Image (cartoon, rainbow, N blue to C red):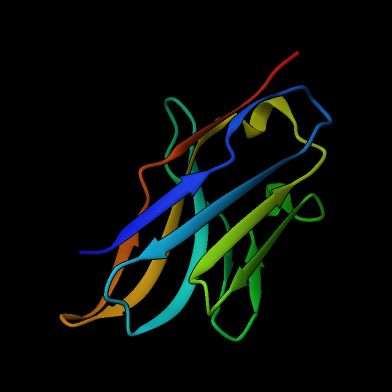
Length: 119
């Protein structure tokens, strides 16, 4: 079995910062792209940021210049540094990872962590 465990969510004032972490564990032979998605109430889940195993990054338009994604391949961990947070960033943030297990490649999700930006 594989687990993606997220941490770092919470309540922050507008303009503040948070850092999300996601660590994968289990019988993992290789990792592909890892990323973060978010879903606000009444809205579809959307890509926030993604990073390939080689370090190439991709960001959603609404977070460019404010969020930074990074990873540690050896620790199978991905982080999302969120700066200059806005109320519209409020959502449940989900970690996502492409992992190669004994069953082959698959795409896995974390349980989600709530981020609330409010004064």
